[in-house]
Image (cartoon, rainbow, N blue to C red; front, top):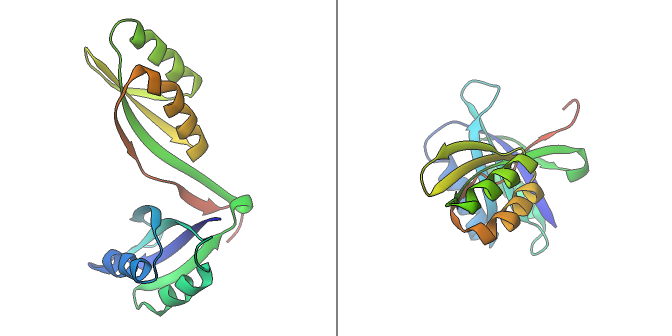
Length: 159
C-alpha cells in the first residue's frame, strides 16, 4: 500500500539528508520526494511517497518524530487527500507525429511549453494515473525525455 507522508521541517542545511538517511537505514525505498516552502516562514513541507506494504509505516514515523528539525508528520489518507503531479515530457514531433502529439496534448489538457523542428515539450499537471495514461499514448511517437515531480498532496478540508 502506498503512503503519502506530509512532513513539516525546519528549512536548514542537512535536514533532507538526515530524513533520507533514516529511510535508507530502515530499508524503505522512497518512491518520490517533493520539497518546497510552506505557509510558515523558515519551514518547508516534504511530500514523501513510500510503499508501506514491505514495512510498517508507524516504525519510520516514530523515528522521524525523534529528529530535531521535524515539526509535524501526517500520513495522509488517500480518500481525504488532494494530490497532483507535475510532468514535463519531450516527444518526437516530425511530420504527421506533430499533429498527433498536439491532439493527445489537447485531450489531456497538457500545455505545450516548447517547440522546435523535431520535438514538442508538454507540461501536464494531474494525478499520477493521468501522467501514466498520457505517456502510454505518447510512447508510439517516441518519448525523448521525461521529468516528474512525483505527487504532492494536501488533506481536504480543515487540518
